[in-house]
Structures are given as C-alpha cells and as structure tokens.
Length: 282
Figure 1 (cartoon, rainbow, N blue to C red):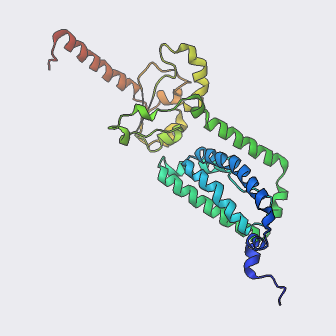
Figure 2 (figure 1 turned 180 degrees about the vertical axis):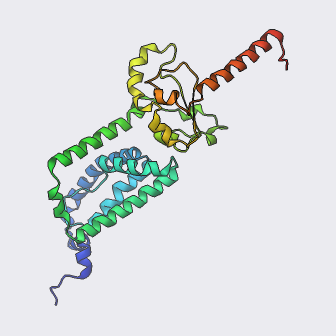
Figure 3 (figure 1 turned 90 degrees about the horizontal axis):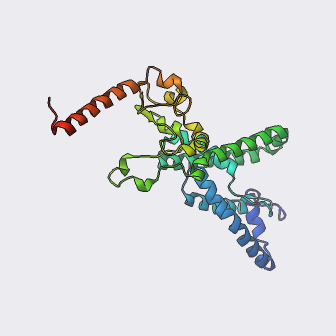
C-alpha cells in the first residue's frame, strides 16, 4: 500500500519528520539550540564531576543523547540531558564497585548507562510508561529530597576545602598515594587505619566548624569492617573518643595505640641519648 508507514519510520520517527523539515524554521532552531547548549553543557560537565567522572564525559552526555533522541523521539519540545539525580545514583552505585580506580569507574558508569538505555527502550516497547502514574507524590518528593541531601553532603569537602592538595605530594610519592573523599572507600581492604585529632593546637577557634565538617569521618566499627579482617587501628594520641574515633574502636581488639605509644617512647629515649652523648650505645 502506498500510504503504509515504513518500518524504519516507526523506530525512527524523528528522522522521518526531519525529511519534511522546513528551512524557514532553521534560524529559530539555531538560536534555540545555542541557548539550550549554553545551559545544558556546563550543567552536564558539573553532573559528570558529581558522579566522579571526567568533565569530558559530561560534554559527551550533553550532545549524544540529544542527537539520538532527535532520531528516536516523538516530541519536538522535550529536552534530553543529564540530571543531578542520575549523577548521584551513578556515584552511589559505581564508586564502591570501582574501589578508587578511575578507569574502572568510567567503565562501570558507561555499562550502567548502556543497560539503563536498553531498559528504557524495552519499557517503551512494552508501553510501561503508565506505571509511573502509580508512584505517589510522597515517594517522588522523598526521593528528590534524598538525592538533594546526598549531593550536598557529598560536595561539602570540595566546598569548604577539606581535601588533600595533590600539589603537596611529591612526584616521587605520587604513584604510591591515592586520595579519597569518602572514608569508607579509603578503608576498603586496608591493613592499617590511622587518624588524628580534628583540631590541632593553634586551631582551637575552628573547632566548631571542624566538628561539623568531619562528622562523617569518625573511625567507628562500621568503617573498620571495610578494612581487612586483621587490620590494625593507630592513633598518635591524645585521642578524643566520640570525635575522630569511637570508643569501641580505640578500646577494641584491633587497636594498637598503646603499642604505638610505647614504640614512640623508646624512639624518644634513643633520640635523647644521641643528643646528650652524641652516639647511641647498644
């Protein structure tokens, strides 16, 4: 039949509509596209960093989905792009599996995006969009509030500057040092977990701010469970139980703080002997 719709047009309705595009719409579409790009590109780059991915990933994510939807989509007004909710979910799902490996994190995120896209296509084919009507408003509001809190808490370190400065690590040691924004990831598989007081001498005026900023960095039993089963805990003392370390850890069987203090005592005695006598006698 001459009026029958080709099979490819049912799968690529946007491409079929493009065949009848009016050139008179081009100036307005170009202006709209530039305005849209001015908003979506920076936001997508920020969302990529929020998910722990390179900024270039956000650039690709702001272009390729739009190009794909232009072929498979049916709405000329819908904007397709990244979202803070999706970035937070990717970070929560992929970062623990990656274990601090940037290349592995990138691979997991790409695989996750691919499977999510395939599931969306399958849901569209099965016309499952109506299931969204059964999601109550409290569930959606709770989900968005949870995502917002997760994003805010995850960025406090970058916002207030409590981050290891890579420039302070020498080139000789850079290959052996890895920094983390999440203490749980830092402790994963570790043989030794060490911490120090949050407020050192001379910084007492910052004590209140530091207690709030480092609240999630207390070494507790849950954090020690991320480390090796025979991992040790060390602290240079004096310690503040309930702040940088929980009492159950510093007083627990994995604690080596008293052996550490004894070793430091012997080292200080040897130093005093050397300074007084100019030598260390056996």
